[in-house]
Image 1: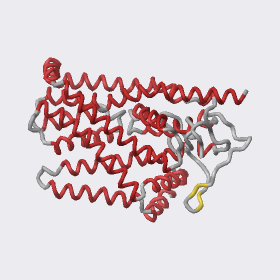
Image 2: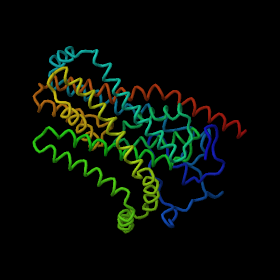
Image 3: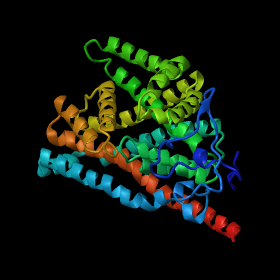
Image 4: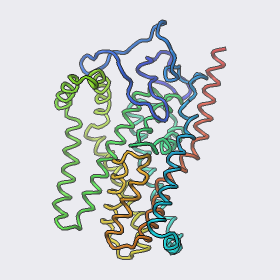
Length: 386
């Protein structure tokens, strides 16, 4: 175990130092597996250390190249965000869009942003529970800062950059990065399951809705069972081992599955999925409040369905932050349900500002603190080296 103030003296390069913020996934190559556990790979004096990933945690050379490049990487989603605004404005007619935005009651931003904060708070509690489960030892303040910086890292295709949170936890003395990767994956799995629950509930007012809702909830339960079904996983891995490209990476996939399975045990899975459902429902409620400004008779469940479905479509697009796909699908759903193009575009812009871009702003606020802590650990490592 690693304390908050220091690093473990002996750690496997392959095991612990493969993750770089904001994006470094599962390591390649590797040792065999016996009884579901990978053999540790111990570096020797002949093992060249040429990659910043493989440098000791806290070393001056390895202070976080990902964070150094983060500002440049944010230019892509920011550019896409500008294009989305321009696209919605041109679709709705800029003058009509401006008129529609002026109609919005700015006082509604208080509850809408509060609901977004409630979403982040619940998900941070889940993050904390998971970190403690895998033995990470960050203080709550540093844990919160890493969680918020994760919002910056999540503005990547499929939110894959959030794996960089594992690197940050390691660099801040919280434990092995590979263990924290399983936490990030468990977050994503339970978020997906939570959104599926909301989509199922959102179909309730539609024709045949109760049956769709029941089928959706049953599907979530079946998915959880399959994810934790060891024999089925072993069968799937046996097939993957025979594939030329994937086969050599199967031992790492099995290792990741072992750790993920621990975090998706029945009790933890129900807790985490419930947290995800309530958290995303809170943002859906905020979306409904904005819609009611333009359509007072808007249905709550249908609004939650619209918001959640648009987010899912944005995620499936693999665009950074779902930009473009989420906004386009949300505006299309609203327009298809009777709102004019200008109002649908206004609602979309307001809601995305109060959710996605609000989270990015919080990540920017937390970033200097994390950067300072990383720099401090690098200076400590330099002092020890000299």
